[in-house]
Image (cartoon, rainbow, N blue to C red; front, top):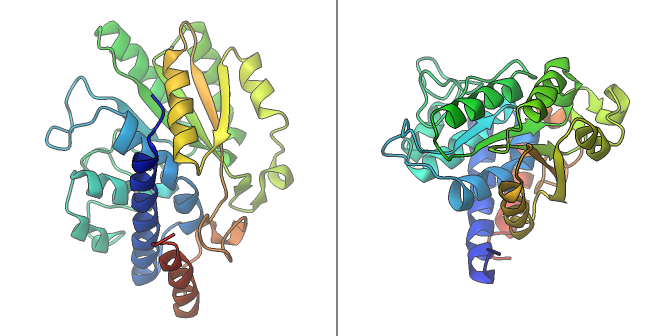
Length: 279
């Protein structure tokens, strides 16, 4: 079902709040990954607040959908979304990357409620997500596994081994969503390791391929609905995004993959993000 105009505005307001809070947290802590956190914002928001079955009061509920942030460096946005859902207090965001904090630099499934998989080394998340999907099938649980991936991560060989296996086992309860911002740690994806025709690649591996604007909550919602309707094979959504979305001087710049935010940059970012609160 398509999102109503009212619901779209609610989700957009959440995204604005999440972007502001993540930038505030990263500035205060002088650490973190702003670029990829900002680009994945709408993807995580639509999943957790519109599409996925989750229960913050019972994080290990067997019937839940599994959302795996395979691009683990975007943990700040994942944590902010989980906190808003009620997995832990929002105030805990202030402990990000501090000693004894549950909010580590990359997600840790052993310590953080709502985190499905410990992700840091890129390229492993899709394999684990496939394992979860096949496990659900064996347990006769009709839930979906969402693997939220980065495009730089697609340089990793294990991704494509998992892609072959997912098609072989007809894992139609697995949906990959690529945060397709075309920028990675050291440059653009074209400069570092060109991905070519990514839609054609996934299709050749036996996947159903969908594409959408990854910052349009309605388009994302529709794409997820279409992916869930696919039978007999896995589906991937190429969500076209902008690294650093919402902060003009960060947008499309690889230097903001993991650079700390200084005071002047923070003030400018806040001016831009807060200016959109009433848009």
